[in-house]
Length: 93
Image (cartoon, rainbow, N blue to C red; front, side, top):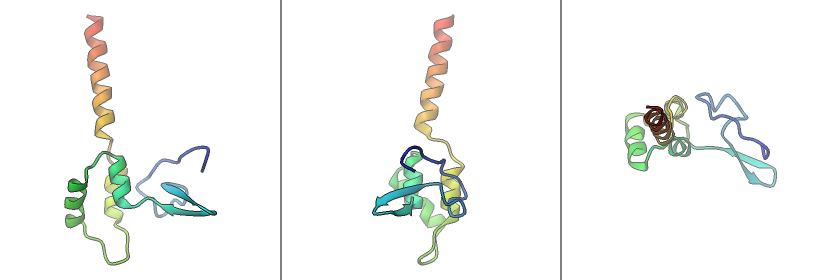
């Protein structure tokens, strides 16, 4: 775990090596739904809206929110890629 990071998948609760945080003393924890969504570029107000639409039962995780994070693309990364393609195309003309 210290040498590399696994992809956060839509099946985090079934894949014990994805989204794990080392909290020390040989103990680990999973990323929360909110943490996964934040990594994908969602802000807290959007996450709050998602939690209202997909409420979780008490003391349970929301697989729908994990799936939302796992099936999305980081918008900031996508924008940088599009910008680079656009600027590269302009320099070739």
